[in-house]
Image 1 (cartoon, helix red, strand yellow):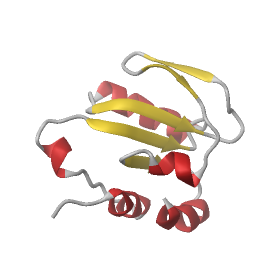
Image 2 (image 1 turned 180 degrees about the vertical axis):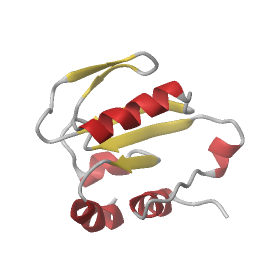
Image 3 (image 1 turned 180 degrees about the horizontal axis):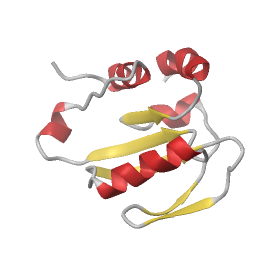
Length: 111
């Protein structure tokens, strides 16, 4: 059974990993979002995507305190940090959350 966007986010919020059938078949995922990307954990998540050759066409970085900052990625190019909104996160097939548990619990179901 293929998981939709909400299943991926919800499972990730519980600490699991889920990828759709396309990623398993060697196709690229359109967009991966990292929420909390200005913190150490968010930066490490981007580094892991780069080092492991994660099959994403695009990465979006969401943060509140670093909106407008540009992160240089060796794989994904220059990425401008964006303010988090549910609508923006819903445009991503996968959203990784590097935020407090309370924030994840509140917002993951809405994404």
